[in-house]
Amino acid sequence: MDEALVHSILENPTTAPINEQYRATLLMLERLTRSPGDFGPDDIAPVLAAGVEPDAIEEAMLVLFVFSLILRFVESFGFPSRTAEERKSLAKNLMRLGYALAAVPGGSRPGERPYERVAADHGSISARG
Image 1 (tube, rainbow, N blue to C red):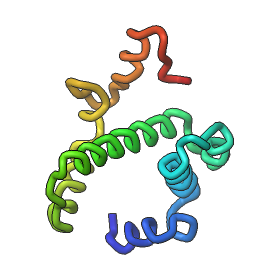
Image 2 (cartoon, rainbow, N blue to C red):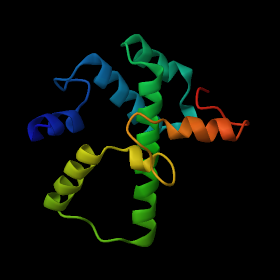
Image 3 (cartoon, rainbow, N blue to C red):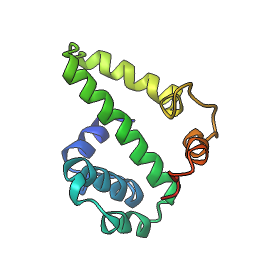
Image 4 (cartoon, helix red, strand yellow):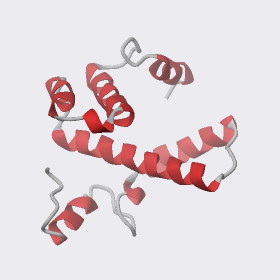
């Protein structure tokens, strides 16, 4: 992804030159990050209205959860900060490998939805909500 586009998105996703599906998803994730206690169905409605599939919303929330958890560990244990060049390299690897390995312990294969398997195995939770 173009560095100028990334900067534009981070600066202000409401004016960044991205499609409405990405915009709605990013704004929803920002709301979930900043005000999780106030987050609810009304925050998801605009994303659905923009044409984002429920599965894509779920995937975006899972990625947000994984990154938030990792960030908390990094901050708690005082790991050293990465340089901008190291962060770019890590981002390229994530784009190449995807996020599937973070889905559940042991990773997954492309196209597999391991958290659904976990949800089904634990009857009391649902991957569909």
